[in-house]
Image: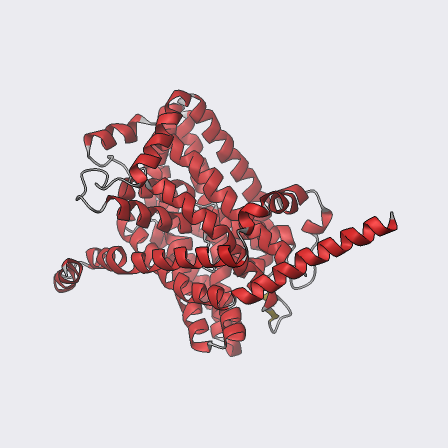
Length: 482
């Protein structure tokens, strides 16, 4: 009853931010967390833990095939398989890996990292399933371009047009917050804290820059992200490794803290007893989803534009995305923060750090690498967030085209203009409010998508079985010839 009374007290006092936080913390976050776990376990059982059994094959088929020219081949009305991956990665390797991770550590404590790992291990197959379905049920629009995503497989696979429309609406709204405003906010905050650049200056420059790219459509977005994503990912990973070298003796203690706090009865930073585990799970899983998008249904929209004819092979890129963003990048980011005095001093004192979000990550990197670290994380945040803004712009316009098919050209251009405007809005909005809105819209996206993933899991299983049977048959034919 406490949550209900808190809801009405916030409502009648016109505490908008507090009201949204109550809605997310006590209702939506729990619903999303339960559905993500159920869907992840369900597809893991149905596909016989493929993320573990076939891990080597997945890595060989993805990272091991980057030099294959077929991964970079483009056709009319589509993008190359690698461009589809980098566009999707642009949406995932964003501030969820820097700012989102830091907010999880403040709100849920060190134990949130453990639950982030769990969400990633389960989410590898959730995202795989989404991408397989997006390729299976995609279609060409009036301009000959390949389009797909949850709204298409929910409509065509389950026959639930109203649920498909709801997903598209929720995604359009989420793109403005999750994929746009949170990102521009993080860029503005970190540049202000490290270089004293006024928020409004960042807002104007960023708005012009984003507008110049996204008004050119998916091919320009894919072309930019194809070059930007690999460079920024390698840059951040190397920066984190160097920072951790200076705190290498603290790493074992950081891992111990993660596992200990994941099951601690008392919440971090002096929180109420009984809410520790729940807070760690809620923020770990919630921010995990924000970092890798497994379960949201956003990344399959980018993958549907790929010219690949093999749904399973493209789906494996989704597994790779979850692994690289959460298991690798988020873990490195978390360890940098958890080995810093700026976080540990506050944690052991039972008080929250003086800074949060991207500013906390920046301070942690700056502590390990004076001057260089703060500048480095500022650069990483700018490029991570910029690529995310570009990637999510495409998700929103595909949904706009789906909802307003008869007037798709006008709808897409109108949405692009609104989207560009929200880049500036994000630099001026309160950090807490903007992350709460992002969390809520993520939950609203996830529910209809996960219904589609569970409901169509048989299709995914069939496609997966066919893929590996073909591999086995080809191998037998090759052996016979030799």
